[in-house]
Image (tube, rainbow, N blue to C red; front, side, top):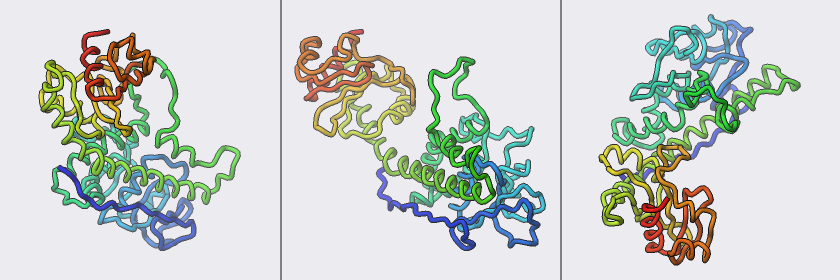
Length: 360
C-alpha cells in the first residue's frame, strides 16, 4: 500500500504557570483533593522516568483524555479521584483505568510474540495504541496498515522503554558490554532531572517532567510517521526485488532495488513470509550520486554481523587500486569492515556481487 497521508506537525507549548494549557501538571503530595479541581491523568511526583512521561503523552492523544490535565502525586486520596492513573498505585486494572507495573505479581506483556514485561508506557500503548496510531496517520482503526504500524512501533520504539524501565538486559550474557550507550531516550529523559548540586524543588521537577513529556512525545510521533509514511511504502520495492532476484543472479542471493528505500528490516520479514531460500547475501541500489552500491545483509535486524561480507582482499581499498585487485572496472571503494562497497555502474556492482559470492 502506498500511503498518501497528511502529516500533522506536533507543536507543543507548555507553561509552568498555565492552568488551561495543553499539558498542565500539578504536584499535589501535600494537598487534599478538595483543594484542587479534579483532573484526569495521574502519575507519581518526584523523580520521573521515560515510561510515565511517554504514557501521559499517549493518553493525551486519545479521544477520552485529549487535553486532560495531569496530576503528579503519590497520595492515595488524590489518585482515587482521577479518571486514569499510570505508574503509581500498585494496581493494573484496565477497566478501572489503573496502569501500574510495580506490584510483585505483575507479569503483563504486549503479546503478539513479545515477551518483555511492560512498563506504564507499554501498558498505555497496549490498550490505546491502535487508536493513537490511526489518528496520527489519518486512517480508520480497522485499517490493516494501522495494525502493522502499531506492532512495528512497539517493536522499534516502545519495547525498549519497557525493557529499560524494568531493568531487562538486551542480551543473555553475564559479560559486560563492549561500550556504553547514554543516548537512548530513557537516558536523555534522566538527564532532565536536576543535578545533585542544583535546585531540586518541586517546581524544578515540574519543569523537567514537562520537558520529558514533550521529548518522548515528539520522538513517538516521529516513529509513527516514519514507519507509516516512509518505511511502509518501501515494502513494495523490496517485494519486487525479491520476486526478480533470479534475474540478477542465478543463485537468487542478490537483489537489485529499482528505487532506494529502507530495505533491511523489510527484507528479513519478507524472506520469512515468502520462504526465500537461500537467503539474500547482497543488495544493489543506486545512490544519490547515481553510482551503485553493494551492501551486505546482516544476520538479523540491528546486527553488525553479516551473512557474507565483501571479500577480505578488497576491504579498505579504493578506485584504481580496487579495480586492479578485483579485476572489475569502475570500483569506487569497499569499506574496511567489508559491509558496503561502490561502483560507478550497475554492471560493475553486479560483477562485485558475483565475485563476492565466490570469494572469502
